[in-house]
Each structure stands twice: as C-alpha cells, then as structure tokens.
Length: 378
Image (cartoon, rainbow, N blue to C red; front, side, top):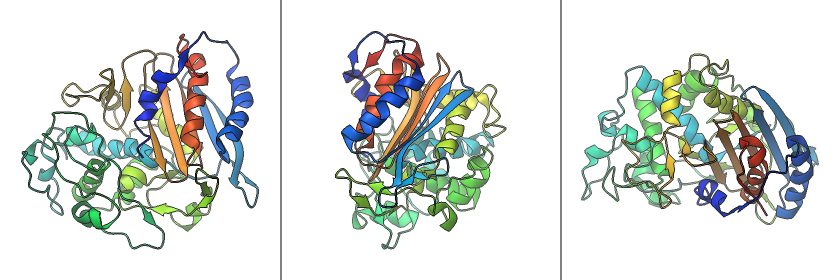
C-alpha cells in the first residue's frame, strides 16, 4: 500500500523524450513480455481506451504458474486501493439522494463507532474531507488478514485495529489542515454507507454501483463462483501467496476483472454520454469527483501540483489525468484516464512486482495516449 502515492509522484522521474509515433498495439506487444520477464511478473491484463469508445484488451502470461492456466477475460484480480474509487461512488450516490451532506460531520451519520477523543475537534471530520483524505485521520494502510483468521467487525477494526495487524483509527492532525492519505478514513465511509443505507456495504455496492454499471463479475465480498476465477497471486520472489481478506473491503477488498474495471473507467471518462454509467451518478457529480476540491485539499501533498478529488488522484499539470492505483500482497492494479484526449489505460497484475512493470508501461504509453511530448521511461 505504501507504493500507492508513487502512482502519481513516480511519473516525474521518467526522462523526457519525443514520441516515437509507434503504434500502441506494437508498443504493448513488444514491451509487455519484456517487462514481465524483467520484473518477474507472471501475468498482466491490460486495456487501452481510445477516444472514450474503442477499447483494446490484452492478456499476457499466467493466472496460475503451476497449472499453466492463462489469463483471460474471466480472470479475477484483487485491486487494492482502487476499491476506494468505487466506494466514493457509493457515498456520492447517497449525497445525490439527499441522505448525506458533504460538509456535515461524519459522526452525524454513524453510531457504531465514534472518533476517539483528541486535541482536535472531531466535528471537522466531514464526509467531504474523508473522501479527499483531508480529515486528519490516521491509518494509511488498512489491516490485512489471512484467510484462516477471524475478521473483526468494522467498528471493532476501527477501535482495536492495533490488535489486528495495524494502527487503530484516530484523529492525528486538525481536520482540513493537510492532505494525508487514510485508508482508515475510507473504512469510516464504508461504515457510513452501511448505517445510512441500512444494508451491508457489499450488498449496497452491488445493488447501487456494480450491477448498474454492468460490473457483473465484481464484488467486495466475492462468493465461491467468483473466487474460483481469482488469479493466483505471487510475491516479489515469484512465490505463490495465499489470498488476503479484509474487514475494510471499501478501502482494499474489491475483486474484479479487466472488463469490469474498464467499464468503470469508461463511465468516469465518458460521463456526458456513456451507457455503462446509465443513471448511477449524474455527470456533474462525477465531474466534481475528478476535480481538485478547493474546499478540501487545503494542504495537498509535498508536490503542490498533485491532488486528490473524491476517490481519484488528480493532476492539473501536463499530462492531465485522474485515476487510482492499488497494491496488496501479490497484486498491483491501476487505471489512468486522460480527459484532454479521452484516452486511458487499465493495468492489472498478479504480482507484488506489478507496480514496477505498470509504472514503466504507463510511461511508455503516455505519449501515445496524451498526444504530448511527455515523460517516457528510459
């Protein structure tokens, strides 16, 4: 999870060079196998969105090395913190319905957990600030569990997560004073969705977000049939790793496929007219989510031109893009969307080394996708 911020900041370390004008398909087919070998990545699923409509799908390598099972359109991936983008859609659905107000304290909507007492005013922990990581709450990465371990409830994990492989969620800085990534803050939003909707988070997300978007092979609580499609994950040494499970599924637990995640990316990119979006969120709501929120991003991060919207990293410098990345043990995924050209990409890997591959591949494709003389990898 600590690599997540490098999804944004890492691009500045690529060396500038002129575009080679190479065909995207040729670039993908030439470079991906080489990058897989270089970084010891068993499998890569990749989608290229062009002009918001045409999408090319690519599958390289294995879902399982031992059985030599190839990746395909049915292969499932854990996408880590990409889950937050979907969770943000769930919150904004409640906002559109008038059930939640962005600038109200989150404690107005939750009763099963309260922010621990601190030197700061907890009423400043608003829904807006949780969405934009400016709430002041702690816990960068949410606790992860092995499949044989008993999962705590949401409120137990928030109150006692020091007993569950992580720091408990507490208010560590003045709300609204600075940008500070908080996976725990999105666990609070998961709790908000449950309490306001009156149903379990995974059921709400399936009914209100995933199914309407056509993400029929995705779940925050995958069942047996979906789990049977999950690719095998591998660590940095190429050793198979066991599946992780989460209480904080809204922050890190989504299982999805390349086709489904691309549907979500397309719905974000084509918010004016996209059949995948249907009536899930209004166009102006999605525009707000992928914009730098001046009401929330008071401090930003150490790179002042990098910011976060509601569930999306956003940049207002060339090449302009928004998206999200996610890492859990054995997994890396990301989606990046370039609104100036209406292009984008989705990358999914079943390896802890996937970040390295995805970062270089992103840089190699960026010139073609943005039509700018942008950074490319050396």
